[in-house]
Length: 305
Ligand code: NAD
Image (cartoon, rainbow, N blue to C red; front, side, top):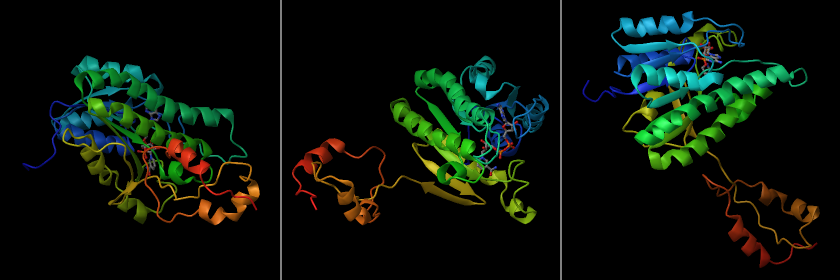
């Protein structure tokens, strides 16, 4: 028990914590000494309606097990109210887990502006609003931990999910910039692309697979990344059913053309295999060094055919 990660004195805000993954996180942090804000709007997985019951049930579970928790029923689109509730009840906020989410799956041919906007509002604008409100507390106390919830659909694309994929990959960019801006204040930001049994996945997978996708299997990574001892930031992790892995960007070694009159489509065509080659890749956390590249491209032999 002595090497158990603990969160005593930590205030942990979890959005969408009335069910699925959020509930698993909330119960864990409640058991490990944290003060937990269980936020949930309580609507359907398509984002219809609202209900206080979802958050209330999880708060009851945490309190019954001897933990500290309050419920909050605001939409993440009003993220400032969620952080306000945390500060009112517990004085500050240390950890934000942007987990709330909905689906509006529809083919791109049939998607409407409202399908697009709703998904973007909940996933991107919601994560922005909650994090923006927590940020001044994080900076002032020189401590903050952020988990943003991406998805394999965002990393790789998925049929019927242009809206969801766009929003979920946006959260990776959001995470990467938060990690860069937050580093000197000990604000660490990571993104996860989980796979777990929940009402979002229960209709698309067979029961024997769902059994192996317990949301509790996602908790240890989130717990580790948000712990006071962690220094991990800027990460994107794909995980589920006990498999944990890190995803990163890859830049192929490419081909450098002389940027003069010889830099034509046919010159590119000739070197295409080199342009797209992924031999000797780099794993960058920033753009290519175009200043140095521009200097080098001046001195190359011409590409003229
Ligand atoms: P879930 O539906 O059980 O949980 C999402 C929760 O968010 C719900 O309780 C819902 O009421 C709440 N919520 C929705 N809109 C809200 C809003 N505007 N404000 C506050 N709360 C709101 O589904 P889940 O599978 O536990 O999903 C959790 C997160 O993980 C989501 O962001 C989802 O996109 C992401 N995700 C899940 C999987 C998976 O395999 N389950 C895969 C990839 C990504």
